[in-house]
Image 1: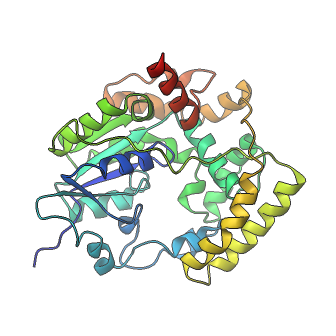
Image 2: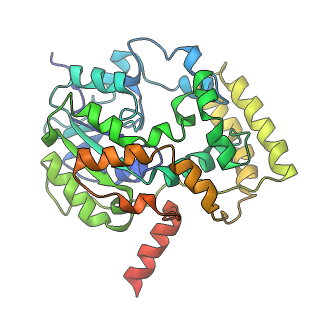
Length: 327
């Protein structure tokens, strides 16, 4: 029997709207999205993720959820209708060059959808996400970025690679050595948020299914900004200790047990303060060469990413879009 593998993937980037895009595409009757989002199968090489690359807070717990066994991965597509176009979403595939090679070797004609976001905005959102979960111990975003190189050397998992994750030029350049350009669709985060119907039609056309069918779904992966208070720090220490202990129990056990703690952490949500210009420029300096490469690879301008101000988070962009549509 022929294996039923994905025919397309949402390959990246993390914190660039892939969760919302996955949910929206899942509403299309001609598409079948794997019931497990982010199975991470192609990040693995037929074995569990090695402990040496899962040394950050919560990494070992998260690694338990990776679908690394081929039979389990194939089972994700068992219920796909025979005529449906099958897909899955693992936003780390774009970042991981070995994952790109495994994916294309397994599915040579795979179609890849990549969503890119201002690298500084993406990094901030990534940091806010980990702070909201109580895992990021560094309360200063700029300092967290400065720690990135050491954390990578120490074996912290990819989700901690704040600026490396936003070097899309290098990532796409490598991917295009493996697949022809017609198998790649590059979207911008702002399109996913602000031009939802048009973006869903672009993706539908790219995948060869009817346009005007998929519908946007409210996002579920938007994390609040939590202030650094004594209460937060105490709760965060519990969260990190619990995540470490959670590495030794089934993932669903810790997820269930951690819900009250996460609710308590998120109760401290406040409006995120603006990023100081000097911090933005310092983080920007780590990716500007890659922005130029991205422009070369895609033939598009990303001049707005060189500005001294960001373009806001998902929630603020979505609110602005709703305000504009209601005016």
